[in-house]
Image (cartoon, rainbow, N blue to C red; front, side, top):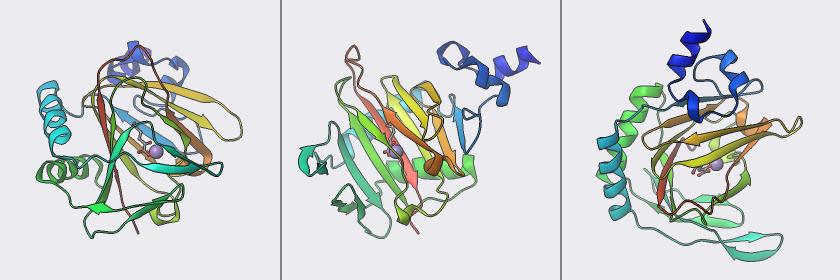
Length: 215
Ligand SMILES: O=C(O)CCC(=O)C(=O)O
Ligand SMILES: [Mn+2]
């Protein structure tokens, strides 16, 4: 039994929360939501190709947001993509929508096929190196719906992803590998916050695409 969970987990060596293997091979959260990790969603060659294509074809923007009343630049590049041209509003910023490129549309179909859910938007992030990061937050904007399903695909550098429960403060840490898929759903955005911390030793870029469904 133990051996089965271990093998189906696939990336046991990079998971630092061994006890959570008990809750299911791919389920990272012990309670109050779901975060299902699929490390082998894409093979290495496809992930490399998608990285190159998304990096070249995305209209990257460096965005200013308001934090505690001050305007600061986000420590990463990003682009908001939506099928209907709808903007996305967060942290005092309204993101202009870009259309899906052929590659992002292809990726969207793959994610929809795997998850059984449909998505009409994506936030595409480029972490140029380990100095780039994303602070603690939840994707709990009203336009994501009450219990949003957020499907996140990673390419390039392996970066850490942390989930922290808002009340118990329990923290789950995982390495998001190239070609992996992480699907957060249920109460996750209400009960947990997540971050991609700075990792100074990382010198290569990472791209992350989070598919969402604006309502
Ligand atoms: O880069 C990641 O893995 C997370 C991205 C994320 O949380 C977001 O775009 O809201
Ligand atoms: Mn997020």
